[in-house]
Length: 488
Image (cartoon, rainbow, N blue to C red):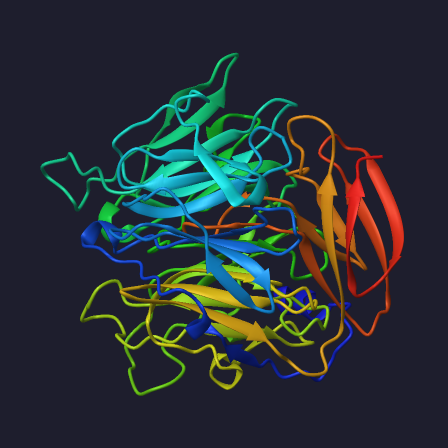
């Protein structure tokens, strides 16, 4: 049955073979560094910080200072002066105050920071001014959503409790919900916590708003599992809700409807198997068949037969054929002898039958540094998704997508009045493909850029939006451009 569903894809095929140019040498050198507290993290945030319609990059530095790279066009970036900020594990962009400038929630080993964005890529620390509760926890995951027209609700995932003298094994910290109040935020404990490395608030297979939490079995050891927290009900789902317990070395989350039924599939990266969960009509999930090509258990180049380690995952249509492809950042934790040391990243291209094939080596992005965070984004505005990769103890990497013969494309941005200015939670359908605007997922970093759709041979697009308040709007537009839609 699963295979039959995967075969029913309504995409137009193109013959493009993915190809990227390495532009890493054009970046200021930046390395995510540090000891055991930076074995994880190393995220990148991609967003437009100055309103010029070009995505910019904020990269965590670990023991080094974080860096902000401004996109000045021509696939060139320069470093923007930024207050020195160390112990950063990652960051997520979102417009918390709805002023039209993206802000940054910065995850740290120690108290997190909130940076308010302003013109010309300027940022100011408003953690205290906005009443953000602070703690000395080790933050490694983040997501946010809106339930009304005020400020966002936020979930922050924490890793090992560094104050636990019996740790680190079995010493996973609790997570935190930040709830907006009349003044500032209230911090509520979300427990139990099993060493969260990724969080994503999004619709699940039931169509309900759910907080998914991916946890690292390496430190919870036993008794833990992946978690789903029903946002409207305010509780964790269990077997009685049809949520089967799954335990893995959870690192990252990616979500995208792959089968055309409107229900998003979910990718969970891990050590060894990368688990793709297929959404079912009854609102549950089942593991994808093993021949689908997404498990990516071992390195696909070299002769190392040990299991590989997945971190950031992201779906994106690299060749614009109308089918979502999958990038997975790979890398050993830190000389773990049981895992592959030279662990190339994956670029898994979706085929017309719903299976995936590995193309990272021929595409030029199969580097074997210890990759952590990453982002697929259109940095040069040509409609092809480019790639930035953050590495532990190795320089930041940047790749330009120069794939020949790609299909048509469309990029969609939304705005609306009120606190949720960028319509987080909206569902956008373009020629039958469904994406939701979310904040979170990945590994320690996310994007706030227009949604990208590959259209294959279709030169026009039918765009339908279900806005967060339930209002529906429809547009028919020409392809090969970015459009901005406002709430009707």
